[in-house]
Image (cartoon, rainbow, N blue to C red):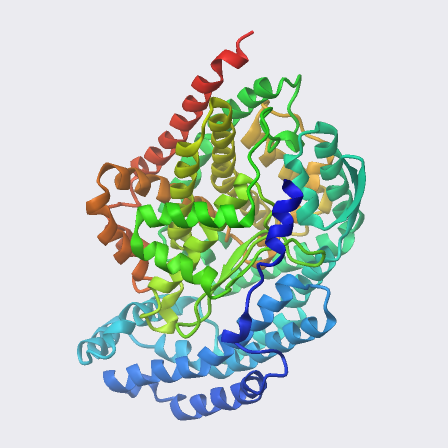
Amino acid sequence: MASSAVLDAQAIQWDLTDLFSGFDDPKFLAVIESAPQTAEAFAQRYRGRLCTLSGDALAEAFQALEVCLIPLYEASQFVHLQFSIDTANTEIQHWVQTMDELETVVQNHSLFFNLELGTLTEAQCEAVLAESSALTVYAYTLRRIVRNAQYYLTEAEEKIVNLKTINGAQAFENLYNELTASFQFTLTVDGEEKTMNGAQLRALRQHADPAVRNTAMRLFFERYETHAIPLSKSFLAIIKDSVQSCQLRGYASPIDVMNQRNDLPTKVVDNLHAVTQASNTLVQRYYRLKKKILGLDSLSLSDIYAPMPTADAVYSFAQAKTIVLDALADFDADFHAKARRMFDENRIHAPVMPTKQGGAYCSSSTHRVNPYVMLNFLGRSRDVSTMAHELGHAIHAMYTQELPLVQQHAILPLCETASVFCEMIVSERLYAQASSDAERQALLTDKLEDLFATSHRQNMFSQFEQVVHGKLSQGPVATETLCELYTEQLRTMFGDSVTYPDGYRWEWLTIPHFISVPFYVYAYNFGNLLVLGLYQRYRENPAAFMAPFKRLLAMGKSQDPMTICQTVGVDLADPAFWESSVAYIDDLVSQLEALCEPSTQK
């Protein structure tokens, strides 16, 4: 059945013609050709004048900037969608490099925009906003530019940073991505020798045989250890670049760069980290229970995603689609309609392929193009939840399409709001449809493991990042030291509930987010716990919840997260809110303990 589910997904491939028909599409080539000239013309028109413009004229300048960026964003999206499903294709690699260089050129032409506006005083900013209703839609963006001006370098310095990044941090990131995407692994599974990529190999953590799970992860980490020199040098170069940038710009600490980007008070992020770390006892309590359920003398880190003794259900892509759409239809007609469009317009790429990136994502660029979703569908209940999660991102993006380009993409901590919410809806539906305690047990374990992976694991990652960035700010750090620091974080999360195979000391080297966007990961935990709190409010009063919730989604990045969450009556500064989310997870663990009690009694 598993193989038939995989085969069923083979036909689900996206149609990108809403963007471009190919790299030889005249429209695509025209964007590549015209983008630098358009950006240069924009600069010639507005450079040196922004702070003297009337409110209406400044609104026109924002709109002119969007005219420069919209075609470029769409071309970049097209290139990176292609790359994600065929990372070894040299033609696509060429276009990725071309887009990186082109985006830098355009960015350098438009650098003056924020830098000039950043010279406005707060009083001048408020005065120009007061004189123009057309500028009101950009009010939050303009105020942020003025407020964050203290972190800007000069225009000449910013241009140098951008140009050096192409052959510096960006080049190291490209090396990391291309090298790890090339990894192929050979392993005998169920009597058949198979060659697979990293995503397929890591999926064997859900295999029923502990020996297969252990061997798969040993092979996975061995490959990274074998390539530790280029990969760790890439990691260290990128993180050191991030640390130096933080120091040059005057941030108090490396994580403050992301806190400013997310427009969150440091205290709120600190509360999130503290509440989550304090609840690591739930992780440990769960995995002690799982060891009993599986009848193992010890539970290894390679076993933490092992299936329950009763095999988990396997779903075809068509079945998963039906489950997700039916659940969304019961939740809200508009959510359902937006999700259905993703299928009807062929905006999903589902099959696992040899050189395809692992994981899943939703990509959105501009209001002119609906989002696209990439999956690696293997037919597990987790894949059903992942489908719901990524469709939630797509729904969120569709709700923001009326906003200006600079406000369409929600700030990172709120990016996960609709996605996790849709995942919760589908998880509860699967649980309600379960016909036996064994099936409910399997679904609960899947849910808890997803929650721990999204909250506690990402929290551990964020804590590791803070330690590493702090160490690098003091001087060089050896690769072996990074392994030791990561092992310490693993032990903080899991305690004595698991054993630690030696290979896991290299796991930090397998996490792309550490180098692609430092401190991105806490947004996953933020979004996850935010939704757990919101979901409890939804269940208390669905009718009263939906209208404010849709307003929250439609606000995109038009306000700061604190203000946006007040739309649904949430105070993010109150630790009690985060603690209520942790209490929800505690209840799920208790639920599982009650289900498992007969089978775990000695």
